[in-house]
Amino acid sequence: MNANKTNECIQCTIKNCTHHADAMDYCTLDTIRIGTHEMNPTKKECTDCESFVNKMQ
Ligand code: SF4
Image (tube, rainbow, N blue to C red; front, side, top):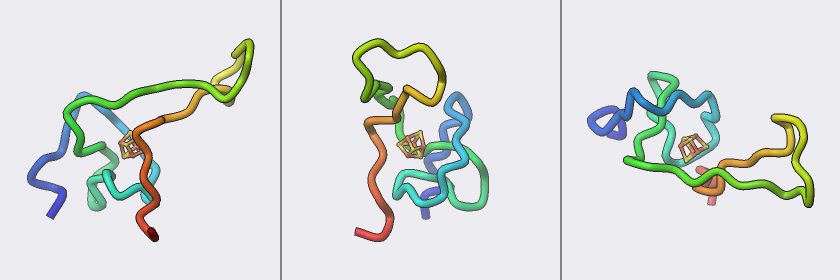
C-alpha cells in the first residue's frame, strides 16, 4: 500500500514506523521533521525523526 508513495529522497530503515515503505527502506511522506531530545545535541544519537508514528498503535 505504502509503496505507491515511496519518497526516494528520504531513506529510512525504521520498519516499525507506519510511514515506512515496508518492502523498501524509504519513507512514504513528502517531508519529515527532524528534532532532538537533547539540550545541546552533539551526536547523531541525539537526533529524532519527529514524524515517526508507531505502526503498532
Ligand atoms: S516518518 Fe521518520 S521514522 Fe517514519 S518512515 Fe519516515 S523517516 Fe522513517
